[in-house]
Image 1 (spheres, one colour):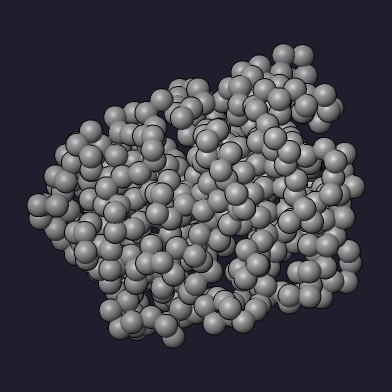
Image 2 (cartoon, rainbow, N blue to C red):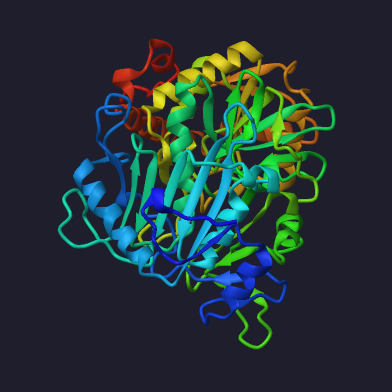
Amino acid sequence: MSFDLKKQGISASKIHRNRSVARLFKGAMARDEYIPSDAGAMIAKSGVKTGRSPGDKRVVEESDSKEDVWWGKVNIPLSEDSFGRIKQEALEFLNGCEDIFVVDGFAGWDPKYKIKVRIICSREYHALFMHNMLIRPTEDELASYGDPDWVVYNAGVALASEGIEGLTSQTCSGLNLKSQEMVIIGSEYAGEMKKGIFTVLNYTLPKQGVLSMHCSANEGSGGDTALFFGLSGTGKTTLSADPNRNLIGDDEHGWSEDGIFNFEGGCYAKTIDLSEEKEPEIFRAIRFGSVLENVVYDPETYKVDYSDGSITENTRCSYPVEYIDNAKIPCVGGHPDNIVFLTCDAFGVLPPVSKLTRGQAMYHFISGYTAKVAGTEVGVTEPEATFSACFGAAFLVWHPTKYAEMLAEMIDRHGSTVWLVNTGWSGGAYGVGERFPLKHTRAIIDAVLDNSMRSAEFDTLDIFGLEIPKVVNHVPPEILNPRTTWADKNAYDSTASKLAAMFVENFKKYADRATAEILDAAPQVPAKS
């Protein structure tokens, strides 16, 4: 059956649509830049860019969406003329390629809200990556696919011309919400495609009354669903990958009146320091059909050294969700009983677990807090607070308060309980205290998921106003209140006040659109004596 891309402006003679994994592997291995790992995965390098370039993200400023977009550092405006120039340069590059790869798939497991996405690219690596990350159509669905809802032109191998108005480099991930197109140029990092589609859904779904979320989700044997939000290093992947629960998804979800649904057909896991012992599900998912990015391997055996971050610490693997043994297919679930906000507090101030009020849930959701520890980055000598709105600011389109208010409405409607779980330090800040043992964090998560903590007695933590359970099964009670674990109580109070002030300062940029309920949930910074 003939297939062309004339509607997308592609005139290349060799167009390969939805090639099989084996055909993509065969074509890729003929090129020197691709290597098969000893486990059978495709090893690819993403060139100079080994991660996303959020500073190069652009959103077209046009009349249809102009009043909706949260403009600023996250959504930098680009004119329609400049987008047209970038698209034309992408088309010229793609039309100059001998082979063009097309991946037609879906985003969103709920049939009511799924969209048709077309990826047009020049590398087998990118095609296989999106074959994994999109929901793969059946033969019948592909035959009746028709026109896509959204098109991604990936010309990442090329560079944008210098001097295009609105760009600050020769790299751009440009999103046009009106024409429903995305253009990638100047970056071969595959994650730009995945997160571009997530950004699209972060705009379109809230318009339909569906909350889009940067979180993982799993389901218990009784059908109870849980969500896990958290920035990098907080334990989101580790704690949601529970062998006793079914995985709904590891990264992107929607919450509609019918329940939770995954956006993706695959997972995109970090692999730095990966081992079968620590992450058996992910380790076993790395096989034929998977894509390993920017990893270091033995040139004789092609065995990957997951501890080697010399190319980048952001080594990753893309694989179909069904490569996880306990994945739930289709990737949907009921309304969540429990919602967990994960933070790694290197200041040692926050309790290992606390129950949030409605206002606190919105406040902490908008704040999206965690902390880097000393030594992880050059120049970081003490804990450094990191805030990312809604635990994924880089992918938001609307103002963060819109997502927070939608979250609160869904919590009210469906009776979910929200918990703040700190996987960071106790007994002092990093360098003085110790990190909470993983066994205690897992016991806390177990107590959250079996609902045993809902009926517990609670104390209130000063300054932050958080409700702390007095007892959690299999967790030493003396570690539940962070202040009691510090030998120097005055030092705790001082550090808590310092962290509270950071929260308040960070929140100033959202205060103009926040309700009184949200603002009242802020930590109370003690007046200086």
